[in-house]
Length: 224
Image 1 (tube, rainbow, N blue to C red):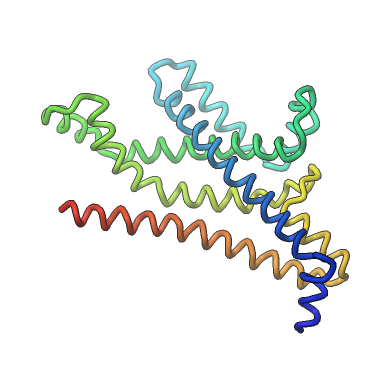
Image 2 (image 1 turned 135 degrees about the vertical axis):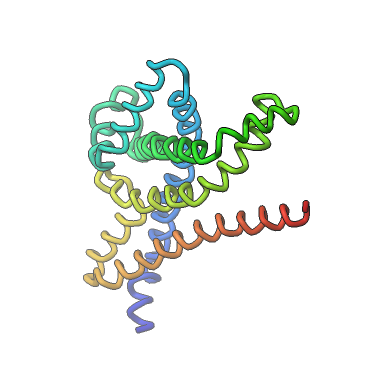
């Protein structure tokens, strides 16, 4: 068994390819989630705008990005939309996952804000808070608490969805695993290692959010 693991993951610098694919996957997820969060804030503001045009544009964007398979979006942007700009496959993947996660995050933000009783805003105003103060101190903390589990799920889903970027020639973790299985003639072992890595990454994401929850609860307890 030790010889088998060595031949598949250590010999001829095979581990370097694993690390390279892992780094590409983490890069897409990290930047894509950052871009998606910014896009989600903008789309959420548009969805809650008093201007009907902004609301319709935000809704159309959400339907397009969430209703289209991510693989088709990748191919559309890589072979058609971004061709005039000379953006490579990795840049295309980051853009597509940023735009797609932005649509999902905007929906999460809207649901989180809607979960807070509107009467609390009026109560805050009677206590002397202005509109911005009531939002920052009353509405936002409760909305974040509601939306955090959904945001965590969005991050894990984004991680899993990156497994299709190999179709536009991006050497991510899944593509490296597939190539390694073909090279060694032992695809089962390579896929098992890949599944283990994805599960480990998903667990790390969940652990980060759970740690944040524990810190917030501790801070709240000390404040009381």
